[in-house]
Length: 93
Image 1: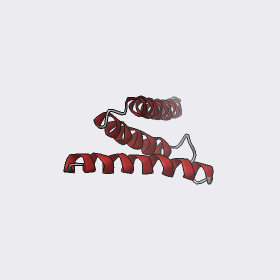
Image 2: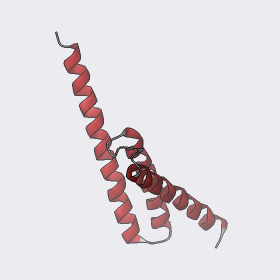
Image 3: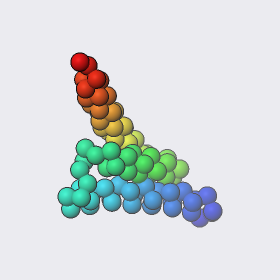
Image 4: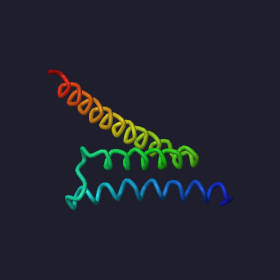
């Protein structure tokens, strides 16, 4: 294993740690799955694990992590849209 492979392995481990942290925090009731923090950590983790997966030609893991990250983006979009709608309705007389 060369230095790049070691670096990409560490990237994947950081991503996996982010995903597992959100999972355990959710189970413990410390992080809501609709929170920005939960979704951002899942997005971050999914991207890092996807990068690791594509580097090592692990295509099934790549696909699931792209879907994982995409679901997080979708969830963040819903939060931002809901907040924008809430803010615009508050300013209307």
